[in-house]
Amino acid sequence: MNKFSTMVVASISGLVGLLVGLVAFFINWNVYGGGMPAYKALLLPGNISLIYIWHPIFTEEIDFWPKLVLQSLGQFGIVVVVSGVGTKLVRWALQFRAQ
Image (spheres, rainbow, N blue to C red):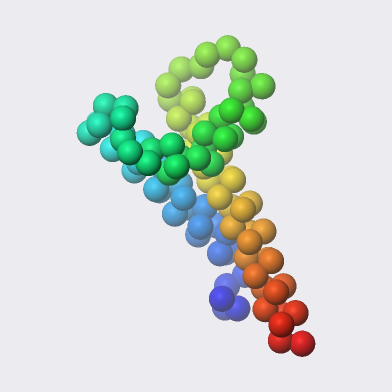
């Protein structure tokens, strides 16, 4: 874990989270028709961003593609922030333990 900086770990985690979210969205839309199990859990960061970040800005209903882009941005951004903070905390705890 010491080989990579916190930003690299957070960015890779964000890309994985974005990929998982897009694949889950695609499967939910095309295979299940809107009722995929664990869909809400897989897209939780994106949905949180839609509700608490983008909804106050865009009070009117927006089209499908802009909403998908906003959800994907939230999915990536929230995963990056959470994994970055988590990585920093783990590194701090390991440093503290080594002393």
